[in-house]
Amino acid sequence: MEAFEGDFSEQMHEALRSGEVISLFFVRVGKSMIIDFRRDIGVQPAVLLDDIVASPRARLQSFRRLRSGLPLPERLTLAPWGSAVREFRDQGLLEEVSARCYDEGGPEMRTAVRNAYHELEKMEQRYLRDLVRGVGMHTIWQRNDP
View 1 (cartoon, rainbow, N blue to C red):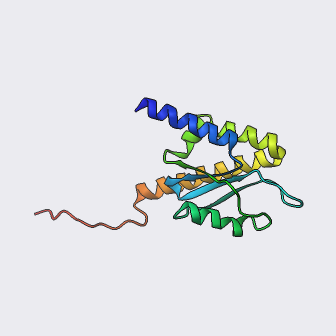
View 2 (cartoon, one colour):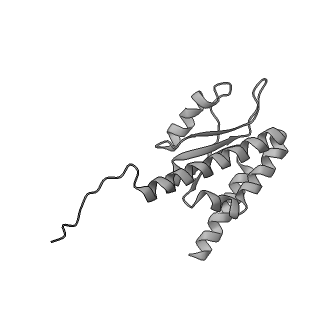
View 3 (cartoon, rainbow, N blue to C red):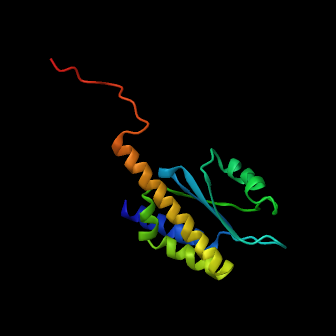
């Protein structure tokens, strides 16, 4: 299991180092952080938060809405993140992507990726708080005491 986790971590680092368009989907909060390093006249690289979609094809098609000033990406790196949002930071992945954003998009893009990450943290905190409080949940079985 540890070997698998090590391989996964290295694969994530490599995806963040090399992907031109990356969709990190944070399963726990139902959101994707999309990092698009492409640029064109009048269109800068961007960091976006969007809902998780049902398929890679749906994510690809979402670029018509999200990045209408650019053609659909030729390659899309999809990276699932099933652990807690804070684990993304704790494993050095936030720093990895922040540094790359700074290198390719300047301080504005680095700030954008950090702001998106903090928004994901807030969403996860709300999710966990609601889970503990039972918000949106229904009792399906109740014990009858004699």
